[in-house]
Length: 288
Figure 1 (cartoon, rainbow, N blue to C red):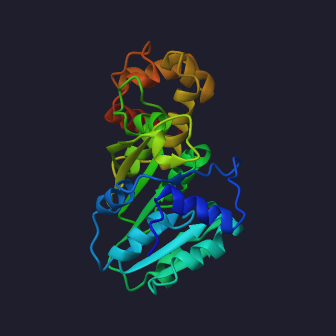
Figure 2 (cartoon, rainbow, N blue to C red):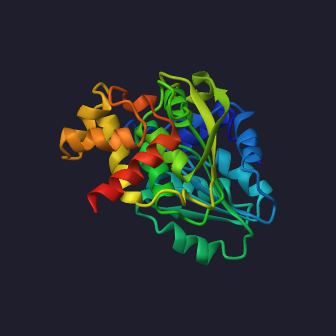
Figure 3 (cartoon, rainbow, N blue to C red):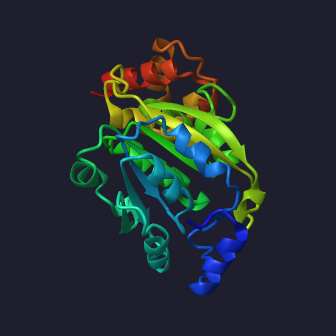
């Protein structure tokens, strides 16, 4: 078996397949042999479980997953890499390669057809920086039958996603992710661990999906509309951002904030998760 994290092996594969990295697809292949085994371990699943990998590249992470779990679905967008994956994974009969855009894949259908005999399913991926948030929210908002998401992303994005509500680093995605699960930073990955070398360091995070998703929140749509509105104008205080963003009078907005025991001069980054819950429920009541 080739060491697909060895930079000389990677260069040889690239040469043999006349492959050039695509900046538009955010392609960076892993050259640090310690990273993929740690990501596999972080999935917290058993050999009877299945994994969906997003952006398989030449198969460096895919091979590690195939060695540990019952079934691996490797989803790769770049058609040029499919022959490479087929070659590098030829010795595994538990891996299926799917050429597709993950944002257009019916993941639930895949789980029910391809992974039906797996006890649990997780997602594991080295995500392109440019589409990190879109993929995370696609996986979470559709509430697919997955137990956890283990992903390597830009370190700055990892810090924002895992920030606690009320921390200065928190943003709309911080709140959104905590609606669906519990995110945590696992370990850093230096930029020198990739080819080509990116401009920034990366970080591996895990999101454990909460199977009892925020039952305290009365209206999911209003909750997310509230969060997006507040953070889209995060430099404004809540009174001004919510009044203009939700098209509610300042008098009504003040009334709702007072009922939620929230200072109208606070900003979105100052609110805890329970504040968002209370506020969205009050808005739901007042707007009906």
